[in-house]
Length: 535
Image (cartoon, one colour):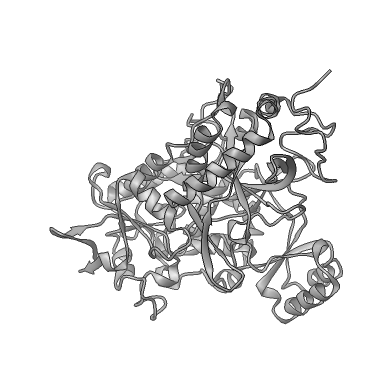
């Protein structure tokens, strides 16, 4: 008797040690993927190839592109690489993921507040102060400053992976300027137009409400004005930025102005936007550039992208900046090692989502053990992103391992080591209409305003080369539409879904206290930190 996906999966082999998201160890479709794979088998390879050609044409015409390095040293736009086979998550899987993410984001937000104020986790001997202050993203100009509303991690994109044991783990945290949400929305829209047959009879949770969730969060932290009257802008470095499409997309979807440095000016510690009618007060800035470039008076003096005096306005509490200045200290890869302890310290809870086992190389004993196992481990620079500088031991040759060992010996504080996770796979169209397993990760997106809201699914990034585990778009990876099935019972934004907890510690007023906060904002912050978030 035939099974769903016959023919389509005839030569499909899941890599040893990996778990496939849609196909079982026996080669048959998993129950939650059976309908999808049946439909794909009925459509056949030619239908997939034709949809792929239309996809590339439409994306290039509409400017849905991503900038990648070319062989001649230049950078060129290419059509956003969307694979046409969705990734499917069950409602139960998603419930566990979103609870774990909400827990983690609350702990990271508390850690950033603590770093710039009370230093409680340092005084408790859990996180070394020498590690914190040595991080490139530790922002001394805002020490003692609390952002309006007490929210630092307004937008978060934690990268998740699933190993061969089926457990979800957090690979890294992104709380500076995480990108990719526009492609989540465009992927879904493109799939409904290119492959509408796949959606027939499926109950899939929507993702297109993200812009409204983000706008609500940005308005909720606007200082000195009711949320409905707040002026919010999205600050982009400009069209040359590789994620400029996303900047323009989000500004358009939220109905707010897309601005560059020349559009903003600070007068008497208040930020304004230049308009044809004169200066207009700005209450919240959603910035998409790093701390180093935002204010030449406080950070890099050679920055042509920044607004002089903006940090002064931020210190005065007259403007909210999302994500808050200095949040990067929380997503440094060396600090990542301590996040499970942060959850225990600030929330008195056990972590719902595990870290990947990680080793800090400043300890000589640990460093010796890592160097002996270099052929088994993954080495990452602590302050890089986008897959830059990642060393994968099992795929490296002798000369590469020797070179990496020298780098570690010279500057051990610049690297961490992690156990290799055999990333799960998902069937992926290989260009000929046939399916082959390719490794994936998942970046869900959360917004933190009055509460934490997490968009169902997220950006599934896929390594398009056989055997590769580098999924970053900037390194040639692609993406997939991510489906979260709706079982009719789970509610995404229902209160009371997290375990009971004691209230997190409130800020110590001796270390800056309620800097720049009105009495109303202080009460709002207390409620937010003491109540479970709605997720």
